Amino acid sequence: MAITIKDIAKRANVSTATVSRVINGIGGYGSDTRNRVLAAAQELGYYKNETATSLVTNKTKTIGIIIPNVSTSFYGNIVTGIEDVAYDFGYSVILTHAGVEGNRLFDSLKLMVNRRVDGIIIVSIYLNKEQQQMIRKLGVPTILLSTISEGNRLPYIKVDDYAASYHATQYLVNQGHQKIGLAGVNQNDQVAGQPRLAGYRDCLEKNQILRDEALIFFGDFSFDAGKRAMDYYMTHELPTALVCASDDTALGIISMAHQYKILVPEQLSVIGYDDTSVAWMTTPPLTTIAQPFYEMGALGCKRLIESVTTNQEIRSEIIPFELMERQTVLQRSNNPKS
Image (tube, rainbow, N blue to C red; front, side, top):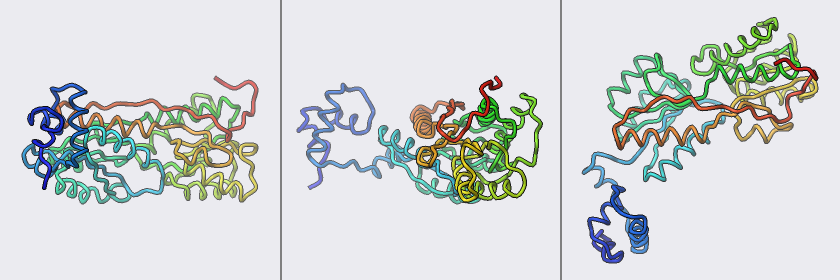
């Protein structure tokens, strides 16, 4: 026999209205009452019928996450942050891949519509005007993580990629490096590639270091891009230090440096970008720019749920990065530049 809220009310010694409010998260009760009702529901083996609830409230308590298919490894912490907050608020999540650079975004959005999600989180996909119009027509609250939209018309949460790249380059300058390269960045990527390229170039100019475009090797932020970059430098000119577009690219550099018998950091200093778990697993541990991916996912999910439940507008936010000093950068001077 199915357990009902009447059974829970009797067990918890409260009214059925109170049980309904607790189960649906409406509020208007104390923490002791909430704990008593939830304990009774668990003891009786009660499971809330989400389908029936969604028909009445027009809410499914489901959040859709859309990420691209790429060969980098930082998405795990973002998704974990989203899932943890969603769970705390009683939401479930649906995750879908939109292909390389989001070329299957339309199919992903169609899936979200069919599943009647209450809100959408899009990660690392740059959205043009046409794609933004498509999202607005859905009428579903949407937030972007680690990306932006054309004209910044959709709310986002991300770090300042220009400032982070500038800071990474300045760190190498401060360690006495003058021959600094940039590896693995996608110059056509408006979200991360172009700002990181500009930060690197501007930092060299500000420090009056002659910019050598031959020290830039473009790529797609991947491990293979790092390997290809190292092959390139070995046949052209090897810098004393490299700013890498991602931790994966940095690991590709370090892997090939080992094959070429180039010592890191004694002969080549390397700084990554992201601070994924692989950064401290490599040998030597990678100095890198840390993006707070878990916090980004958690904050994005919280802001989205606030918008779903209160209809308030989501505001864009820039969150801080951090330089993680480990063992892949060599100080070449006792009198670093400031």
